[in-house]
Amino acid sequence: PPRRVAHRDLKPENLLLRTERDDSDIKIADFGFAKRCPTVKCLTTQCGTPGYVAPEILEGVQYGTKADMWSLGVIAYILLGGYPPFIEQNQRDLFRKIRKGQYEFHPEYWGRVSKEAKDLIASMLTVDPDRRISAEQALRNSWITAGDEALAGKDLGKNLEALLKFNTKRKFKAAVKAVIASNKMTSLGENFKQNIQASY
Image (tube, rainbow, N blue to C red; front, side, top):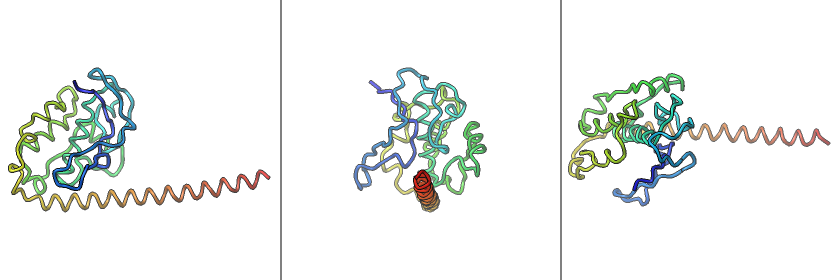
């Protein structure tokens, strides 16, 4: 029987390969936001990572495990297209795009990606969770069940370049955040020392 657990923070950083082999299994990490959801819609907490969060979470309505299917749609879009489906300079505009489900398959990156793959992503990135594909349905999808031969011969070089650029930007942002956090910790430590000295 299905376990009915909503992860609520699925993103590439939380997907780990068990081995370095090409056919390695994937493990999901970071269950900090995970919650059991025995009914279709039993969760209300607004949580997740901005670019991957489902519209219903942003709307503040009850939601269920299909919120994870939205996040998987974003991940699949990034892996096949090389860039995120929702990109905006500020969070308000990003969330507006997510709520409306405003994304597109740009021909220069998606021209060589099969219609079946794009249809699967579109079924995951369906704004209405009642119409969004479930995990069980996704596992039966023709693109998922097709053999490796169906994927062979597809030249996704341009997409890989875009993915490398996206990953580089992400790593750079993470490094900048680490430096900012380090500086904050240093200044907090100095303030703490000053406060201790002032108390004598």
